Image 1 (cartoon, rainbow, N blue to C red):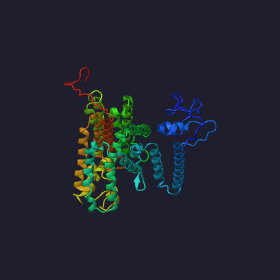
Image 2: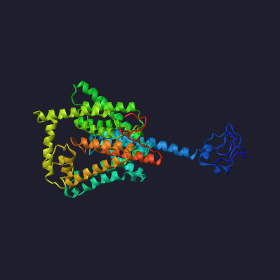
Image 3: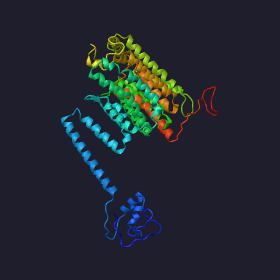
Length: 495
């Protein structure tokens, strides 16, 4: 309670008024508030009055909001000090798990700033493919992002993404029966892992887009791709243009990341708000990085993604890209020549020859249980008599692990997802459509279920739905330019 002053009277409002009164004890005022009148003020005015500096020795009390703010600050500092000390102890005594505590501190810090930023961490986290204990860094952050996204979801507009969610649920449901037949821990864990990589990633992407963080998430991802592409290009110049490996990233992992970055930059939807020169620079650097890594699978996927974007009318003028053919033809020729050279050589350890060997072994494993498969991660358990390699083809891997039933679910997931994205407004759906199609094409010649890579395409698809829902809720309508062809074009538009 504010103590009663010696004199008080109501006055007309003036420059030093606080919510309808003037303070006589304020440096530029001449009246004070009657004790009872304080209760009639708005909350904001009352707080500003209490915060005004008193004069003439009157007794005042610290505002309640200030006490809470100081308490929260002190508590936050204490928590960070405890976490920092714990991380230091863990680094010395449990080095294998120190990274998890560090990621936990990062999550707490980001959540303290804005809880809706936590799902954004799942996008750059896809680069953390190194396994730390039972899981990779990307799996850990994706799991945390899924939990936070479920809290933020609250059903606001998620019904618009229902077709995509049903597609993912179709695959997850059809892979569940084999859990009864193949009863071992790795199988159960990997099934739950795939649930998060598909449905969890879709929800994370949707929340990112709906909360207005699409530009931040995709911008950080493409910026990291540009950095990797630049380093890969420089490294190739120094190693005589041999395939580039960067630390924990295999050349095919580099190619898979840069493939997505290249497609995002080439699509450059208007809701990202990137200037064209920036998008084309990122596109060029990612392309150089893929060429330096010599990841033929990623180049094939990138070609498919570019074709999908190029054949759909551009958002701003309705025309289709002509420059894509300048890119597609030489890239396709390069991949064809490389594969033919490897198949014609006598090197039985070349990547093409090795893949043919793995294909044969995968079919042998599949024939042990054609309908339901032999279970997830059989290449680590060796219970089939085979191991040490993961089938370098999406359909073969699915056949061996979850059988024909699971393959039906896998193909249905992609067919449903591609169909749903095709039916979206092209301003939103083209990017997701291109990324999903590119990943499916790339996985015909490489691993599919890999930490980070297998979630990224569904995160991007979810972002497209989330941005569309955010624009709808804010009354923003993005209409693509009418399609322009030789036979049908808007007056004044050159074809």
